[in-house]
Amino acid sequence: MAVYTEIDDQTLSAFIADYDIGELVSYKGIAEGVENSNYLLVTSQGPYILTLYEKRVNPADLPFFLGLMNHLAGNGLACPTPVAARDGEALRELCGRPAAIVTFLRGMWPRRIQAHHCAQLGTALARMHLAGEGFTLTRRNALSVDGWRPLFEAARPRADEVMPGLADEIARELDLLEARWPTDLPHGVIHADAFPDNVFYLNDQFSGLIDFYFACNDLLAYDVAVCLNAWCFEADRSFNATKARLLLASYRKVRPFEDAELNALPLLCRGSAMRFLLTRLYDWLNTPAGAFVKPKDPMEYLHKLRFHAAVSGPGAYGLE
Amino acid sequence: MAVYTEIDDQTLSAFIADYDIGELVSYKGIAEGVENSNYLLVTSQGPYILTLYEKRVNPADLPFFLGLMNHLAGNGLACPTPVAARDGEALRELCGRPAAIVTFLRGMWPRRIQAHHCAQLGTALARMHLAGEGFTLTRRNALSVDGWRPLFEAARPRADEVMPGLADEIARELDLLEARWPTDLPHGVIHADAFPDNVFYLNDQFSGLIDFYFACNDLLAYDVAVCLNAWCFEADRSFNATKARLLLASYRKVRPFEDAELNALPLLCRGSAMRFLLTRLYDWLNTPAGAFVKPKDPMEYLHKLRFHAAVSGPGAYGLE
Image 1: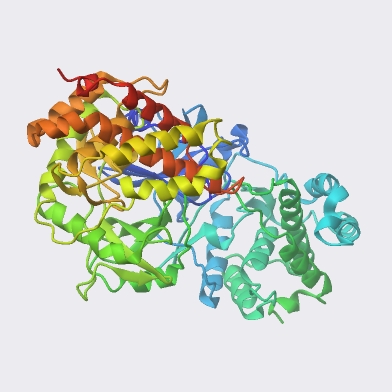
Image 2: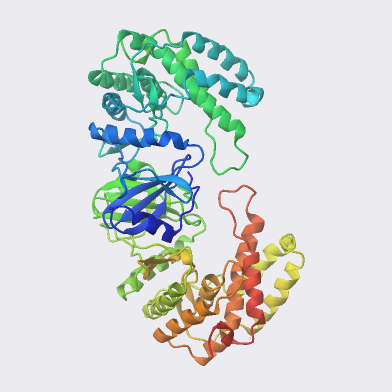
């Protein structure tokens, strides 16, 4: 939850005047998201979202993110689309920061995940992977396997403050992941952060994906692994194989898995768990006490990692 | 900036179904306001504001606040109006808290106060005072003169941590205010918190008042004094007599002052400065370090208090 940049009403009205979106009628800071400043604008033409990109986003990545949203929407995926100003540019500057207005996406993210959400997510994610084909810009995944060790080294000296033995456990797991990580699976543009708060539903129907600010080129099945971790564990840490089965089955109806992808799934899930364990661990150790944004518990992802490390094969995810 | 209560999407959809405002399409927590949880809802009929009343609001006061908004709007004042559910009630319960939906008010509060804002505020405030006539519910002002000493006593032991000598200075001033505070001036329903963030403008025209959660029955001229303090000092602490003159002149065109009100103005301004000095001082001393909401600087209001204590008469406010 954060609005980092306060915008002056006059400055914003002047900014809006460069667009063909009507006159500004209202704007409110949105108390969601921790990376950027988001405002819900209401103009005489309806609602829009304004994002000011804060320091955790690399400005050089913004053409990729905004171009991707346009590309995906052009290929029929429901997602916000950047609105170009009269000069033709969607990426502009406001209050000294890169800024963009995107269309307003109807829907709400599900606070209580139900099986039908997972089934629809599988379909939507596969459609996104297909819709991403032909997008010419690329962005490497800085948070994939070769990005994990630097994160670990930064967190290692104090990792055992979170749990005794944590540093050793991560070190062993990281050796294994680096040795076995696959490289020859189908790849393309992935969302890489399709957690429930980035997937909207309206009347129990999928209505769109948002927040493409971790999107990158990587193994498509890795995106599925991220979702299995984010959507298929219950609050009591148990794995819900029904949700996983629905997610995978609906995904594979739209984009069939190769055998190699299926077999790699447990390892990809371990890797995805490692990625979120490490970023959460780093944030946990580096967030000042009483900070504005409360860091998320890294241990949730240690438990997920252990689950995937213990499965005997992809059948654990509800498949035969 | 605060959303204290997180609302579940299913719970909210079920709540909305009790109203005739269309189907819920979206909701976002608003990162403004420190007393309550506010959400901007978008339904198939347009935007609305949902407020969950948190612990700083006394539930017994809610019929006054909501009834007042209806009464003022019925008398032509631009302000949000509570939306009744199908059972006829506007005051309902959500997530274990009192909750109400109000209409969406177009406009934005001015970040940079200009003279024309003050002129229009004067007109609007006087219209509100007239529009409040005939409202049958009453609410005493718990933060008027008899509420100041208890606040002071709570803050007194540590007041000098903020500035050496502050406790003595407040004590002397409080003795004077209690001895001289007027009681026989015109009274009625006042807003009591008409700071810039509670007054909306659209295209440089006043578009409405919001946030009536300090409204009460008190001296009408005291409400004007609150505004003189909140709108007519510059960032460098100087008093802008032009803004004050415009505010007062436009107010008095709609509701002429009695001579007694005019003469009492310096004292009422001192009292209003004392009220915000004391509440800010209390919050300053009682907000944990690193808390979610950053307390406002009490010293700003000590300087305002000193200004009004030093004036020779109401002429200091730009009048003859």
